[in-house]
Image (tube, rainbow, N blue to C red; front, side, top):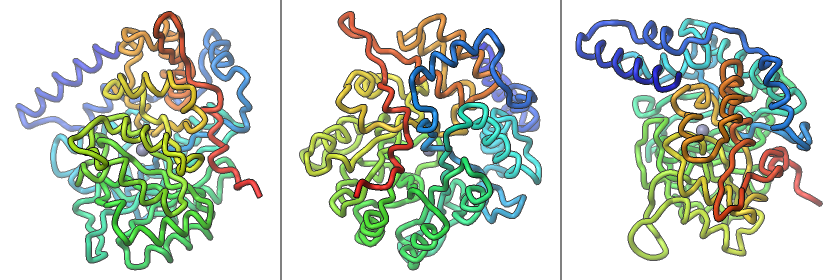
Length: 409
Ligand SMILES: [Zn+2]
């Protein structure tokens, strides 16, 4: 079904682009629209879901990485870059994001987005919590906001408010370090209950080595808040500076005592080896830091998005196989990405040996009703076989709550 849909999408998009006609949202809705309300998987699949939870402590099973899109329509103060509405490709991309999650692009988009996300989460694990990420704008060297370069903007206050009104939601702030009042904003976010800081340096144009980051690293360390930071190549949000994703630059944060969570375990693309010469897989640079004893217990990675078709391969194999690393891995979904059908192909995962045929069928059934539960089940079912030994992610990876525990006294 996945291939048919993707092929349909491609040809339909090509037709529209060639003729210059058609409506992006109609196309996306025709192909991806999920008009079904979020619901539990069908009876035949529930035993599978129970098996996927296994012996996990469900109160500790959190989603540590979920995005919220805000277009300002319901007063959030956020926006999705207007470039999305200026080109056909951009409109289609936005419409796909929304239609995949079952959202209508109307003035209530942002409210509906939050409602859907929370419904999906509550049907996934009502005993756990979901961490929703704010997303700051691009800020230039002079400290001025640059909306034209920002892919989207999800304000801290808005996400903090969602967390305030929902006991199972936690809020991760996003403050661009080049803002003149960055430290004040971090403190304000902390007062509002922030449990982490989120940066996407490639898209937000943040050089994590910049001296302006230092006071924030120190404050985060004092507050015990982790910095969830993208590393490696970025493909979902428009990238401004790919070098900004170099994992080795994050030593600047670690050296200030800050806990760092490398999003997606830097599992995509290459980066310059700042300790030597040439470039190598970004994952290997992250892995090198993990072996540096001074960072032990401070450096983590999340496995969000690692099952996407463009991320399967060496980094995923290594993270599954390397049991030593599991204590430093945290699960997160990178929602709404798992809602986009073709990004995680169970057919592809089965073909590469990551999923059994039976698990694939069950995962697909879960996808039809709940992309968040789907993301969890796929990662729980994931297997990597080498020399006759089957490796899986350890339970601890999925008990993401531990990242947010207060430090032991
Ligand atoms: Zn993300």
